Image 1 (tube, rainbow, N blue to C red):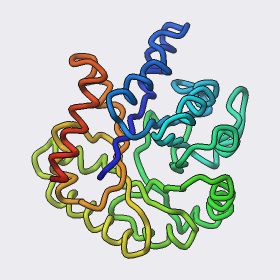
Image 2 (cartoon, rainbow, N blue to C red; image 1 turned 180 degrees about the vertical axis):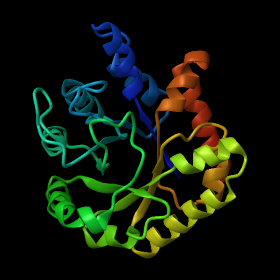
Image 3 (cartoon, helix red, strand yellow; image 1 turned 90 degrees about the horizontal axis):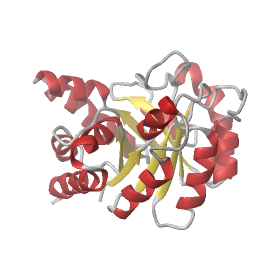
Length: 252
C-alpha cells in the first residue's frame, strides 16, 4: 500500500506570517496522524521561512511514539547558519525514518528539479553513508527523465523520489500521457536497480489516482501544498481521509 506522508510546511508558513504559535504545526501533525496518514514530511530551509529547527525537533519527539514515519527533506549541501544547524545535524538529533535529499537553492520558492548525479554524486556518496549510519532510509529527489536513476543505487541510497511537478503541470493542461509514461519508466528503472520509489510535488486529489494507477510501484507519496490548500475548504482530517481514499481506490 502506498503511504501518504503529509508535508506540513504550509502550516508553518501561515504561522510565521503572524508570529506566535497559531496555527500550531504540532496540532496539524496530530490531526493528520489521527486521520490515518502514514507519515509527516517537513522541509526545513536555512532561511527559516517555514518549518524551523525547533519544529523538527518537536515533531521528532511526537513521531517517535507512533507507527508513522518522519521524513525530513532538505539540501545536504546547505551550510549551517544561524539557528539552522544543517540537514545532517537535524537528522542526527531527531532520527527520522527517512531523509530525502533535494538539490534546492536558497533562491528557490519550491523544489523544481532533481539531482544531477554526474555533477553531485561524489559529494553525495559520503553524506548518504553518514545518514545510513544514523539509521535513516535515504531517498534522492530525481527527475523522471534523468539518466542517473541507476546511479542512485551506486551511491548507497535506498529510494528515489520522482519529481512529479512536470506530470502535474501536464495533467492540468490535459496532455499528460508522455509525462506519466516518463514517471512509470523511472519507477521501473529504479525497481530494477533495487531501489524503492517515492513521489511528490503538486500531486492532488484529481491527478493522484491516475498517477498511482500508471505507477503502481510507489511506496510513498509526499503531499503538502495541494492538501493544505484543499483543507482550508474541507478541513484537515477530512482532506487527509479523502487522499487515503484516492490511494485505496487506485490500489484496489
